[in-house]
Length: 539
Ligand SMILES: Cc1ncc(COP(=O)(O)O)c(C=O)c1O
Image 1 (tube, helix red, strand yellow):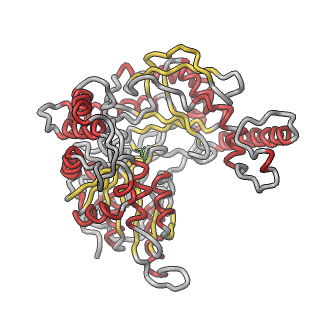
Image 2 (cartoon, protein in one colour; image 1 turned 120 degrees about the horizontal axis):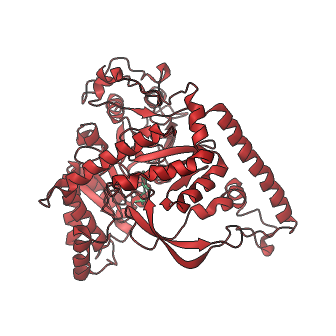
Image 3 (tube, rainbow, N blue to C red; image 1 turned 60 degrees about the horizontal axis):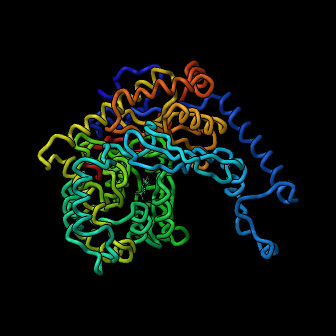
């Protein structure tokens, strides 16, 4: 109740929490409806680009214009096309125009500032050449360096250097063979303690942690219920597993519960046998939306319907919660309620790789059944050491308050940065506590222009458009870091400089009209009508 009594701020809409008893803190997320005029103009923009795309494809077909992207060779002309699909059409005709905004080489640490190799293109972004110059001290608003551990000085770097001197940098073997080092075991014990689970297993790559472990846990006859905005690695893992996949609306508990009910009531198609296994797959923080999973409600549902829960904490581990232990810590829940705790070391820990945490039996099983555990070379020792040192720092086991300071700094920076952008009238998405801050640009032409104009002002941002976002929801995505200072975060002033022609009018226009919020309103009321008490979900 108390959470719904918070004063409604004018500039945002709030998701209404329907089961407040499940939450021990306010849950505030905002998603403004795309203004109609903006939507129309955006579709027109894509329409014009598509018409010109077809026109140019026609000219390429008749060799009037040179085609520089992948195409079938002359000797394959009689074959069915190998490379031609809509994505390739999109790459040729749309992406290439603004490609200079991506793939820029950095030549230093991706800290709060970074150095970027300057490049030019003399053939309309088909190829790039280095100019020999370096763009120094560009403010980095794009790296997932939430706690600022991506550093080349300090205790993490020092420890990693020492370990490199002792072990070298490569392992040259899998965990089952000669690639099982004492430092890996030390790391796994630490990860398990950090997460509050019985056991943990680590992998050299976050992407492979998902894509190779989901197939070890689910297969034919199993049903995976996957959030529509889940990361590609989760989607790939689900597909590789051979399970049936059903997708629920992003963070929408009505949609999830409906799928769960249908699964129980109808069972498998045709035979109507019960599903062998129900596996709900969600993320902690969604990196394109800045939203936080409604974990208390997901846990309540999974208990009620006896489904397993796979939680990917790639962006939330280290970045959320009073102790930096992710979304479980953030909501004050019990880690035992999550069956499979997955996360990566690539973000808050400034390292590489991924982990799975959970019950001892789960980890034992995965050690011998996961392709990633059995067949992939294990993690390089300096990387493992970076994880150990950053994690012990977060836990305060290094005897300093450095970890706690970073956590507090990240939280303050997030609040400050989000508030500043809102005050300036920008449309930003996501949860108030999420360090991932998407700012809406909408139109395709603005993606390129915004990224370039920001870089001219010495600010590096990530801009994102279709197919990574819905077609009319292109955006800039800022990642706030504990390494940012207030002055650095006043890049907002830099944003103001480009906002006039690019973003500001949209924000103002939308403020004058009513807007909707995603996954809210009566239709989002979970179908179960008796609120769960926290931790006691199933009847
Ligand atoms: C939710 C999620 N899971 C998994 C991954 C893959 O992790 P990695 O980049 O460490 O391989 C990412 C990458 O950004 C991610 O966002």
